[in-house]
Length: 411
Image 1: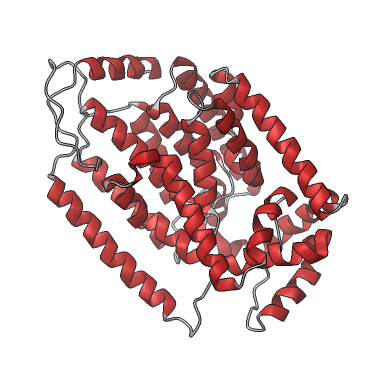
Image 2: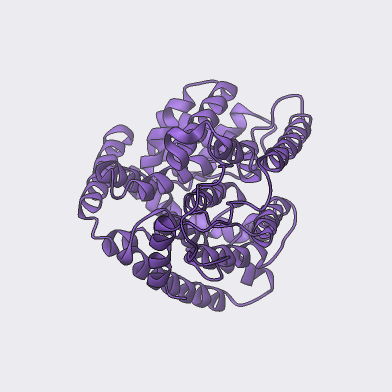
């Protein structure tokens, strides 16, 4: 089924919604599922907090020290030896190797956090990122069952526990994509800020060019220029050279620790490495996947830009990136909520098989926190992309008009 055919079917569904409900079960069952998720999340957090007398801030300790050290050392933050000594001076029990891989523009966001004590900084980081994530994915509809689903999703839990930047990445990508037509200036700013994690912007230029979004392109470029200038003025003229110089050593360090980290990386490149395939095979296949996704997104985005293509672009980004961790996956939950909202408006049923596969995907992501599951997560992401793109929808919109079903995800 072609993407253009899917677009015509969506338009027909909006004019003549089928009688099928949005979900094959009641609102009460959906609320019960959320309640079970809440119990699981609470148990997980209790176990997490009980690991040590103080809250184990995990990766956030590294982010916090980046901002704290950059404020005084400037380019020295990219010296792994000096940074490690500073981190140990703050916490003698910290034995990890945690260099700073992020560009200087991201340090501008971390430096205010570095001025706070660790615990308040963590709360501000998680609460602020989560708020931006909910606003980007749901806007004013965040106080709904959809908002509860995002809050209780396992991907949210993993990011909270890690203290990482998954919420910020999701907010910038989702917000940029959703605002492309209605808020082009804001969209451009968000895409410009997303360059702090450029591997999540691989397909953004394809989307921008296919939709002829000239204003977001210009604004994104200006945003990058402004953040580059501001970080240079704040941290010193050599800060960007120091970052570029450290990039090679960070790559070597990542490669040396690949065995310890790869179980938590849901990408095709890492999956090939886990089964012993040569690196050139992994990157060649990844390149082919990126080309195929770019072609699919060009065709879809050029045809129409709506919630379906937004969800497609998010899923395609997760498949295309060669470098991601489980804490980057809140963006997946955002894509699913956007797609669920679209199907709700069009009265398209979600089959029990779809629900089971989504549940399996979240279970795989949680399991990857400890276990290596080669190809499981990327294969499931490909399946989701195909479903959102329109392959194998439950039924076409051929029925006569009928009343809207009772919503499950709305308030």
